[in-house]
Length: 125
Image (cartoon, rainbow, N blue to C red):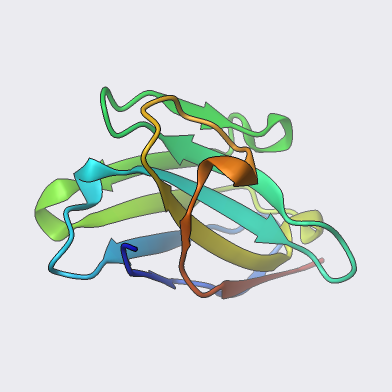
């Protein structure tokens, strides 16, 4: 399984921005995988945030993230980014990146076989 490292979380005030990174271990090429971002708030189920297709770069966003979050890929750095703007307290949670082989971008957890560890995002009001 591909090994992923998520980073970039932190504490930010409402309205602020953060950029999360998901980097694949060097022996893997991140563009061989569709990458998804998920988040899990305390006491809640993990939900899909965004994803980017390995085949054509198509992207998909959860409804509450559209217009605020942007997913992108830098293959030279073997990294997928999640730029999060206009953050709200309800965006607080542990954010995870995951890799799957399907070329269809999906925010369904079942589409992903490899998961990185979470990075914590806390948005204060």
